[in-house]
Length: 92
Image 1: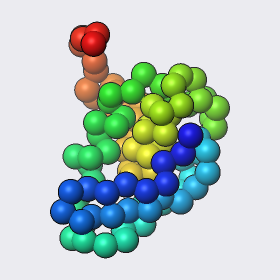
Image 2: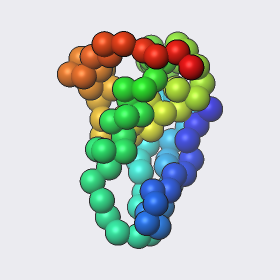
Image 3: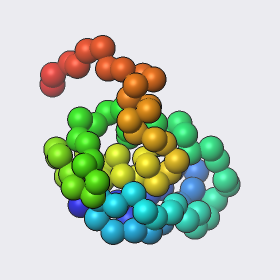
Image 4: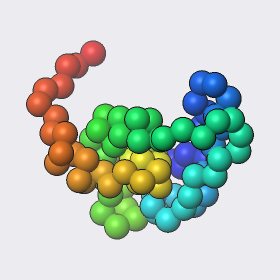
């Protein structure tokens, strides 16, 4: 699974380059006001249990797409998880 595009309310639209679970790629701003994406990308890194072993995914494909998107958006997922460790999980 690969994230291809996302929109932030307020008409901020981004397309994403790259294939599969490779973190090589870019976020291309396609319209709207430029904003700092850290507040959008950080939760993607922290909410997922998936992890990458090179370009191989260990875990859920949807979570894999989110962590790859976070990496492409400038968040180093492993460092973010160390800085903000999960202390609990509430099952639904």
